[in-house]
Amino acid sequence: MIIGILALQGGFHLHQLSLESLQIKSELIRYPKQLDHCDALIIPGGESTTLMKQIMKNNFFDSLIEFANKKSIMGTCAGMIISSCRSSDKLNRSLSVIDIEVDRNSWGRQVHSFEAEVNLNFDNDNPFNATFIRAPKVSRMGHGVESFAEYGDSAVLLSDGRHLMASFHPEIGDDNRIHKLFMGMIK
Ligand code: GLN
Image 1 (cartoon, rainbow, N blue to C red):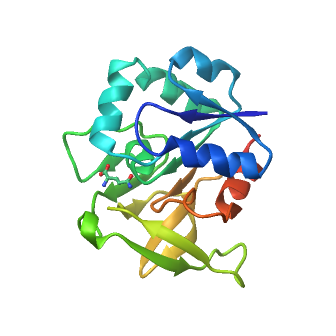
Image 2: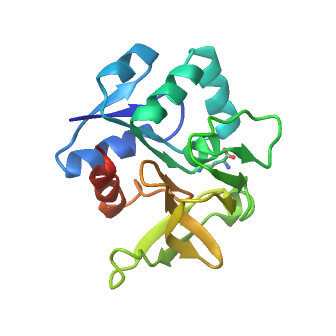
């Protein structure tokens, strides 16, 4: 099994280390053709406007949508924003691979970034120390989308059964439970 990590912009390297800690093979993806031999894909955090520009410039837009129709995508932070149906930023296109809408930068600016313990509903006894960096807030969850963790009244980890989205950065720190959860979703 090979997990692709989109490496056009943002924090792709730490995802590679998280997968390594689970002894999962990964490949940094810079050309659409590389998607052909991936079993799933991680779209990392970064800056969603820049990331989408890079996706367009490198001809990834249609390939990513096609990929998502058959295989699983894990989107974290900016990766979640561009995977959603619509974000509060109207200028930014999105891939609409999962039926959620998000508000960008909804917990404030860079200086308001924070860490918080969140309860994972599949491992209730051990909270996850989640890092939120100019994180998006989910404003609508479509039918069939389930929340696996909340912070305040917001879902921060969600899935439609195929794709997994986190508004925080599960690759920061040495707790690989979210990556493990994603591995379990891959068909
Ligand atoms: N605020 C960023 C954006 O709108 C996302 C930040 C992140 O990925 N950590 O794209």
